[in-house]
Amino acid sequence: MEDELISKKELLDITGISYGQLYRWKRKKLIPEEWFIRKSTFTGQETFFPRDKILSRIEQIKQWKEDVPLDELAKRLSPDGIDVERTGEDLVRLGIASPPALRLYEEAHPRARVLAFREIVCAHLVHEAIASGQVSLDEARQLIPMFEHSVTMFRDMQVRLDLVRKLGVGIWLARAPDAEVVIDPQANVAFSADVASAVEQLKLKLMG
Image 1 (cartoon, rainbow, N blue to C red):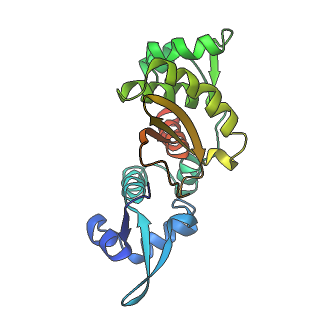
Image 2: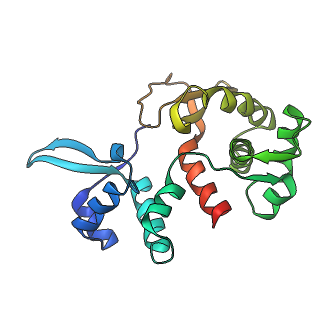
């Protein structure tokens, strides 16, 4: 369940950025410190990164840096929430949540007519779970209280939610994004969501 890693050399070759740019973006907090992973290799200590996360992040930075100051971009890419509210209709129009996901969310929160940012994140994750085709409606329904419980326990919504299923029975597991987990060989991870990554994507969509 560990993220695939990419070396610093390969990263610079693929993205075309310089060593100086990479570390400037680190200093500006555009790239999290914990993504710089030092490992021993046969040539000595080398730096690696979670492949999908760093490639996606650098693409975002390159796309936005000409139009948005780096300090403002750092705020957009941080895992912190933002002060924003949207109706369910807004979320459907923006492609953030589907009507089935909103119906499940409204079942859990019947009075929720306008959603704050954390609630938007939850509705979006329910939407992603349903859209994956790997999560039943009942399992998606169970995701709502699991999300709400876990984000109060992990700093800045730095949490990964996994649906682990064995013999047709699924349970949700919350863990730190880089934590290694060993599961029963007869079980499988049916769906996985990185909440912090979802936060980043939603902030870009809602603020952009």
